[in-house]
Image (cartoon, rainbow, N blue to C red; front, side):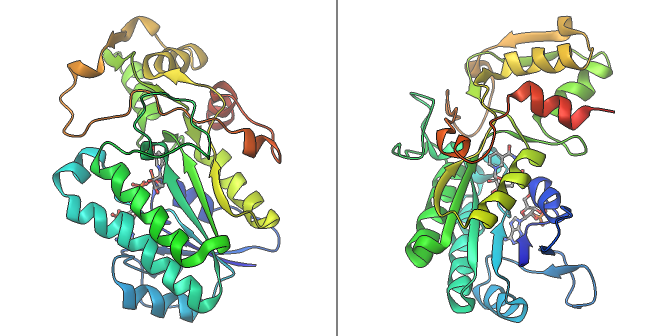
Length: 286
Ligand SMILES: NC(=O)c1ccc[n+]([C@@H]2O[C@H](COP(=O)([O-])OP(=O)(O)OC[C@H]3O[C@@H](n4cnc5c(N)ncnc54)[C@H](OP(=O)(O)O)[C@@H]3O)[C@@H](O)[C@H]2O)c1
């Protein structure tokens, strides 16, 4: 099976593209890739329809995984045109190309499609994004679904982390290791998820040929403050450096959902769910 990973220079895309699975050939692509087929990474800017179609026709993959996105939540608020191009038009262009090559698509999406007023969202809950990032990501889902129907799987996840990348978990770890105090909100609930767990699930989705929406996160609904305390506890760092604050204390440009936790009952039908602690230990062991 030939699988094109779009956004393979990003945190999640690089984890997916570096999987070593018998019978699957992963092909990397990034915005700053190469024009030369013999070099590892192809160049694709997903906001440019002609480029996306030409490349996907040339590669003719069985699956396209779109992990590319403009993920800076405050950046999206300040620059909604850029958010729309990467997060809505990008998936639309990829879906158009997949329709031509009869490839299946996995669109990586986010818990930020929800307003966070209730939490514990299932795949059937109604979306209501409250900031440009979530709005553009939801629009991308809708565009791709309208074009590909059952040839699309939308994977929604929450607060992604891996050991060798900049993210919420490594920021806490690095700060505590340096003896720095960190102020963390205790009134925002999430389900932090490792790239390893998501990448393995992507392979399962392809093997099983799943379509529709699938929530993929840790089974732990935690406040960001609780996550920070768990990181300190599990990694033997000083919990005393973690100070609770409220979302209202932070000067974010974009609103954040208060509780965007996901329920993964559908996922639990074909793979064992993991807690945040299990994912953290698996990521940081050795
Ligand atoms: N990180 C999280 O906590 C989180 C939570 C929930 C869902 N997600 C979703 O998970 C996916 C992966 O997130 P991530 O954290 O791995 O993101 P990331 O590290 O920010 O990587 C995103 C990648 O997308 C590329 N990209 C952006 N616009 C592009 C364009 N127009 N054409 C081609 N490439 C483009 C970026 O390339 P450049 O560097 O060249 O811009 C970057 O390599 C995204 O769909 C995101 O919405 C992430």
